[in-house]
Structures are given as structure tokens and as C-alpha cells.
Length: 206
Image 1 (cartoon, rainbow, N blue to C red):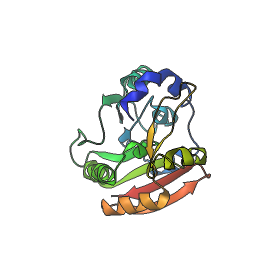
Image 2 (image 1 turned 90 degrees about the vertical axis):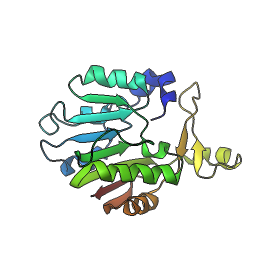
Image 3 (image 1 turned 180 degrees about the vertical axis):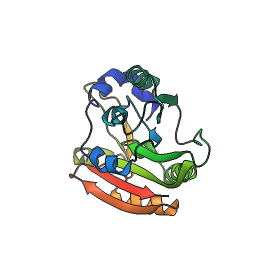
Image 4 (image 1 turned 135 degrees about the vertical axis):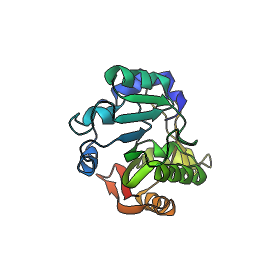
């Protein structure tokens, strides 16, 4: 998640204080005692939704670029691990390290296919054999279509946040594109679909 979220971290966190329904698709894929890496973890909303008898305290790792959102996450989950890191760069973990990786509404912040593939290959590297990756991306609101196309933004859209209209750039990544990218990175894709006409989701295995 981009560092500019620091400017409105508290307001943004208030809009991310409940689990999304698609989390229920992920939970059955997690086995008790596994380690999970959450890319673009924000305020650790996903962690809050995962019971501690499934993911034990200390078995959750979150990466984000917003230090202010990470402060909220650390306050709420002091036994877990949070790092400020740009996940368009090499991930700071050894190979075969995690059973589960998630990217909840964060993958679309990577604004080029080159960055997307590089991240997925890094995820493949640090996942244990048989490990799983779960990704969600926005179905971008059509009300922003013309404002972006008229400025020649075809793939990367500017979508503001809140009353202050804080700028945020998103890459349009649908379910078909997610599946293609995951396969190119070496994954076996078990699910790629539009969920509740709101978010695209993909589940894949190393």
C-alpha cells in the first residue's frame, strides 16, 4: 500500500474495520499452525478476522508502506510482526518460508505488469511447496471511467479517497488477468472470479 496513505491513515482505517465476505473463502484454505504473510496489510484487518486458534499470535506477518497504518496494526496485534516495506521490491524473507500469502486490495497498487510478475515470482519463492496465495483486486468504479480515459489513463486509474480527494492510483486487474499472471509465475490456479460484483479474487497453489 502506497506511503501516501500516511496522510489519511486514521480515516482510511475506519473504513477497514470489518472483514470482507471474501475472507470466508480464504479461511478454509488455512490449516491450524500455519504462517501467513499479508502484503499491503494496512491496519491488519485480515489478522483481526483470523482466530488465534487458527493463526497463532506471532504467526502473522504484515508488510505495508504506510507507517501510520502499521502503528495501528502493531497496537492491535503486539505479538505479530509488521514491517514497512515496498513489495514491488524483493521480499525480505528466505525461500520456502510461509504456507499462505495474501494480498487483499493491494496487488492493484502495482502499476506495471513487470512489477506484478516480479512480486508473484517472489511470492512463489518464499512459499513452501504446496503453499497458497490469495489475491483480491477492485472492480474499479465506472464513475471514474471517463475522468481517467480522457486523460489517457487506460490501465492505471486515479481514484480519490474521502472528502479531501486524496489521490490514489490503481491498476485495472480482473480475474482473467490475475489467472494469467499467476500461471506465468508458476502457480496452479484453482479459483479466479468476480466476487459479488465488487472484487476480483484469485486463489492459487505453489
